[in-house]
Image (tube, rainbow, N blue to C red):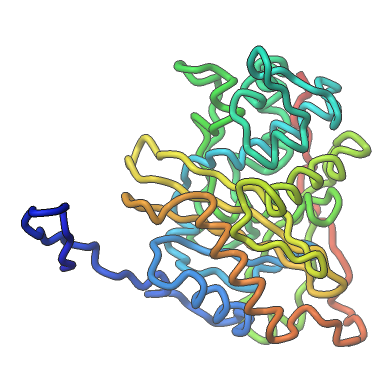
Length: 348
């Protein structure tokens, strides 16, 4: 317990702090990139949450901290859903990157500003203009509502609703994620598709050296988006880190980080949620880092999650993890398209 003063001439009271947690407890580290895992575990510390780190160009999971939390349930994505909304609106010509939308009588935002500052009203307007059917179409294309991994033991899918939320309608769905349940793996797959320029990979988690040596990326499908859609949202994701809601991730022009925060309360669990989905843009070893925090106290928010992710990138950079090693590509680096039914969700 900690002694807390309640003010002048008042008696001190004792506030019971939550016991420290070990998010790594029970994890199986076989196959993990241990350099990445140590950086992720050290950055997360005792904060309740999960970290997933993925190679966006292959779909390989390099590490998953708090595997039980990451695999077995889904959570409201909060404002990270705005990435889906933005890509849908750009592709459907509902908005362009430089379109100014008034969110009040005297205040307007363009897409870059709205993503960087996570303006709820802006994305409520976009969602209302798109309508539920079009929003769901793009959410399905981006992998929501289904497992992100390929035969990953214990993985359960998130939930994509069959109709707009009863309260707040599609606007609440596209600004807060109301009605949607997402796992950290689904978020990592979505961010990987943005980072690599438009290919949604199956996430794979090789657990033995033999599986790592024989690893072959497997494609779900290419994203059918506006030609400049990904480039347009990247500006807002970079702005979030440079001057917006994700400033705690840290501004570094030499090793820029792009990402989107999310902060809200999960209605089912009544827990606060803090998300940060991100990737770096460097010459070698590009990573997707997803941080999801959950709890009932003030240490849970999207900005705090961005700080955890920023610490991971900084720790790896200090170890020169992002420096090219000039290793020639292996035969297993070839990409395989999985012979399954292709993405055919009907366009409304």
